Image 1 (cartoon, rainbow, N blue to C red):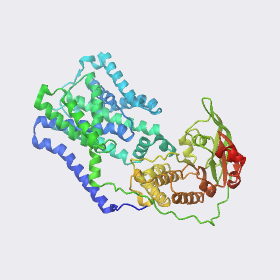
Image 2 (cartoon, rainbow, N blue to C red):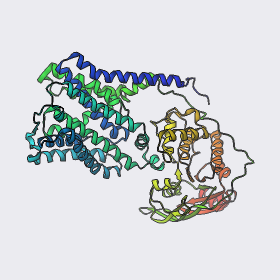
Image 3 (tube, rainbow, N blue to C red):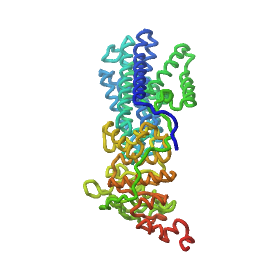
Image 4 (cartoon, rainbow, N blue to C red):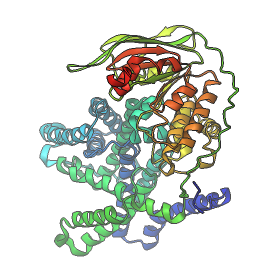
Length: 599
């Protein structure tokens, strides 16, 4: 297969694009501060203050809703907590500069309480929980009248000055709102460009693959929602002081929650600057319409948001940032049929000596209702050994893999892994298996599609390195060993199926595992790719990695395996040398039927 004629961008071209991007961003931020000062109109000041506030709130929401992929439809919980904490403390004589941190602390506690049980589940539970708790907090604000003012709300004491965030002029309020926007953008950029950001995106894209790479998915999501809640609460404190009046319906508003999520969606969800662009586009339109039409424009902003959202979904599904990215040619598109060259394995290669046991499976049992999926399965994997695991469809191979990688708890039996300290351990979840050096691929390939090839491999490298530079260097070295070096900057989704399978192996190898579990990595690829995959597996074995491979490609099983185990109906029916096993009558019967076994 040949590549398309698209010319890869040079390093200089990429640097120039990045420079232009930063320059454009700098001009936009400068405009938010300079334009209202030059115009000098109070209403224009209000519009730009509102842009900064909503951009900051949307940026904070994007950390959990975009990076982590957890849709928070009740994010105004944290905004309202910050607003009430600040105002209540102001009424007690405490400056809102202190109150905003108190509100942030309360918001973090609320975020963890709401999120922790939801993040351990799959599905829409987090989105539903945030909506439910938003209503709970609104009712609580109505109930505790002595503290919150109930339905009447709370007025802000008109104490003028920086200490109280209340001013006669608009400029100081603009400076504070602009400063909060910069803080939110800086935090969002810092998270996305560091280890946590890569792990959050990986968790959003493919949670199972992220867990297999050693990512503590619940923990990183809790960090994201905590940071997001704290920032939202701090913005809420200032906004309350700016409005000078708060009440439950507006502070704990579902409409506000959807609105700040919509800014991120329109600007580019999961991007650093998308929420800012969404707010810059939408806020002036709605505010100018309200100013021009007055009472006649009540509810107009909802119509504007809905219209813009509809147009974005139809014509810009990746938001404004997606259009800008395509326009600037930030990514090159190419077929990539030949994912790179791997040195061919020499037929005269001498396999390394088989060493001591590194993994022991003892009497594993698994039931799904009345179905006995695995029945008393036991075997041992030794250092430097390639163990082939074969059997007809439905034999229980993938279920067995899920149990020996921590994704499925056995009903009976145990799995033991030899640690680097020389002692045996019994891990219970994918993170513990990864820590002990057990890495796995998946039957259905699971790339992080929104990330580049390099970033995919970096997720595995982060298991060993905390610094981004170290993980990037390790990823590059691994990519070149796996024949993916020239595709480092391509999106993972641009690779062929053979390339994706190799990418998944590369991601695991970046973790430097001692045991590699391969689940049908040669299924669906052509004969040439099978040969390259066999060479790759043999080269991995030469580094001392022990391999268990589920395969249906018998050519690969025969070329790779030192030993073969055959599963049928959840039981081991044969084990031993590959050439002898494939001639076993029980194995022939399991694959082809009794009439062939008797022939």
